[in-house]
Image (cartoon, rainbow, N blue to C red; front, side, top):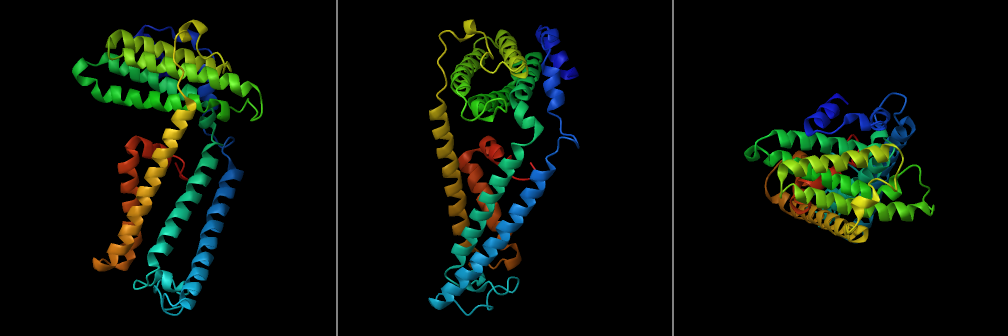
Length: 320
């Protein structure tokens, strides 16, 4: 909280008005008491079960391939995977199918388990306040720099505001105080769409008058973070500041994000298929094939989805 108070002081804001924010920051810290031990054990069990299930699936698929005449008898496949049959045989025409299924299934399970684990982390439920703090500190840092030195700080501020906007648009689903069938969800969803629109307006003013715009943006962020920490989910900003603001379309944003994610997955899958077909002719050792295939999938997904969006997707992986 010391850095936040310093940032507010440099921006000319009164840090004393942030009464509920320190409590939210304290509650968001991971401790031995708040760590979700049960979910961690369940995640390990789910991953182990998924791998075992996939191994049995590949063995069954290999036996079917043998019966259809698509590969050599079971046991003549890859020396490191005896019994899995033609799916691991470099000369088998179904090797690509096996590896693609393996990576797609494993990544899907890992993302699902990581998302489930992340939703039970303390900082997940206070993401709005934590992001506003990062934004205020970013505003103070950018304002203290010369105009020619602000480029990286402003890009970082854009990313923080983008993540905050996404958290606001999902708040009606992620807030622990709102039941999933509660009629309160509609009012919170509509208000957060307006707040996201107001945030875009304030962010755009940074390019008109940087010094004043950064201060006003920090003031808006402090209001959002403090009101969220105080539990005023449908009053994150005063009504006067939302007049004439165009709300951000949650449906359009959700559809666009889904399309980008689907394109990233399709690119990763295509790269896996291409690498699987081309690797046997490169002469590389078989031991490094899996690493090259996985690396090609990561690079393809990052090129299509972008580094920032790919980083948000990677946050759902276990250990993030």
